[in-house]
Amino acid sequence: MNLMPFLLFEGDCADAMRFYQSCLDGDLEIVLLRDTPMKDQAPEHLHDKVAYSRLTSGLVDISATDWQHQTRTPRQGNTIGLYLTSDSFGELEAAFGKLAVGADPDLLDELRDMPFGAYGHLCDRFGVNWFFRGEPAP
Image (cartoon, rainbow, N blue to C red):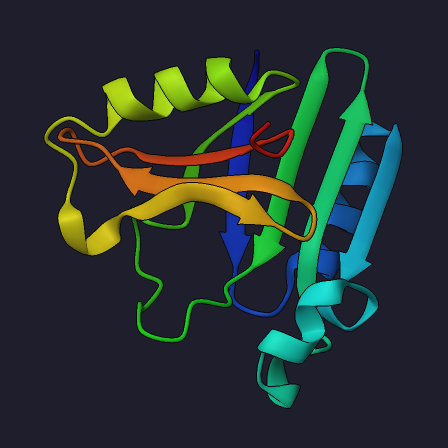
């Protein structure tokens, strides 16, 4: 498994990640929602938002996105989280299950298959946001 910081922005993710790249060098990947299979499931006003971004430079590895959740509001504390990735769905599922114990049920997105692989999110009992991504379920 890999663990990295995960940042959520309110529409300026691409600008922020380009700034971080100018400060830290490295390779930057930016994928807009309109360029993914998820665009058909999202309102048109979100299509120009960043669906996924990643900056890698040496030991630096930062992932980010623009805020896209329709029923939750960004506020200080919920725009920074941890991003856990794995090539093993079973490993990811086990970690999700353990971290979900006592998690806020209103901030829980069960681990499930999406067009880009397995995805899940939870806010653990200590208020830390965890995002999960990996291989689809077997």
